[in-house]
Image (cartoon, rainbow, N blue to C red; front, side, top):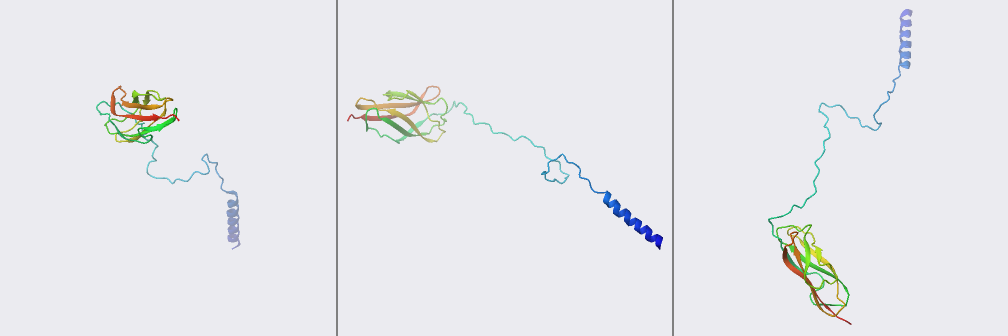
Length: 176
């Protein structure tokens, strides 16, 4: 029985000493510590593809459309308003693009009659899509001399063709 006990004790010593020498070693990883664990799958990993990018909207020249500007109302400075000599005037007209062409680059407003009242005789027309109601604004300066003044303006296409209702400012300069 003693030999069995001796074998048993020897067996225990081997087990305990083997456990002490076989400590697990940590292998240095090349991946970041915060990388989440992704379990293996049978499905292939999708590869990233580039998403389609939206292209900027480009105004294509319109050839078979109708340009129409319709006057709705004076937003500021009703016709016949009395003003002081050389007064700054913020004139605004409400209009609608009720044609079939969008107004964009190259569309202008041009002086067709009357006084410039401090404004260049050609101005860019406010861009507007078909059906849009917009406010056209100009900064005028009343003449220094007393009297009645009118400045009439017309919309023009990029090809130089007039269209739509003319718009105007009509004032009376009153000296004190």
